[in-house]
Length: 313
Image 1 (cartoon, one colour):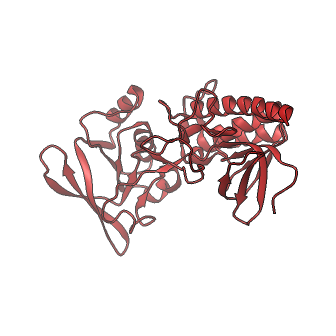
Image 2 (tube, rainbow, N blue to C red; image 1 turned 60 degrees about the vertical axis):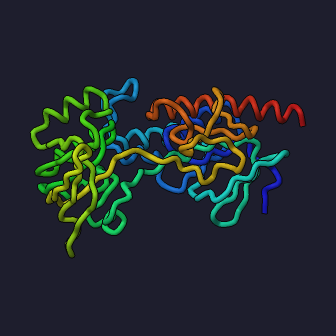
Image 3 (cartoon, rainbow, N blue to C red; image 1 turned 90 degrees about the horizontal axis):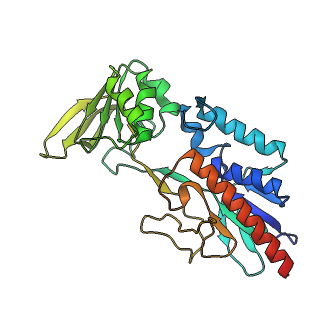
């Protein structure tokens, strides 16, 4: 049954963008609920250290996530711990359906669903997930203390996680398909000067191998000459980017070829009253600070949209 009195705004996703939107929505006196199926902060909780949040030289991802949540709570933001299974646009209001069958009416929706780690798509990856294959060094690094691991990727996340794993593991191999990293220069210098890290340039993984105890090796392939070799390892950590979590994006909403939502400078999609922010939205840089900026922009735009809608009703 759909509620008779709609919310002004429903925010789906409790990452940096979602919580920032919630804070600004509360400041704008919108009747708002933030719905998050997991823990506050989203992917932020999988980050060991954040060193580029303005005003804070260094803070753990989980601590920053907690601060977002506490800040929003101080403004009285309602947070619902449920999973959203559907978003249906409407002329009078939009409808958000929860996993328990409940439906909520709202004038505006901010989609802050973020992204999920991309997979390599090679033999052994799915089979040995949780038995040596991981997409989160902060979550699983402890289990590889004094062991050997392979990190796949060449961006900021891959290098950040490699440095974190180097604090725990005996040896860290970084396999990158090119001959130069895409990460920031500070991270590159740290990785190249870390004695426990060995970089495997022009290298991709072709297969992940395991025994009864879990992962015990990988087959690598050189991207230049195609040569293959076997490397013994106890674990494989994959950081090759993210895919947008776009399953809740309403039909007819414009997306690019990679599945990212196309929105204007107000973060509004081509469906009036539906906004997209953070890693779900097509944009140049995907950072905590840009997700928060999106949240601010979308909430301010949503407040204007709701005000106009109520004035015209």
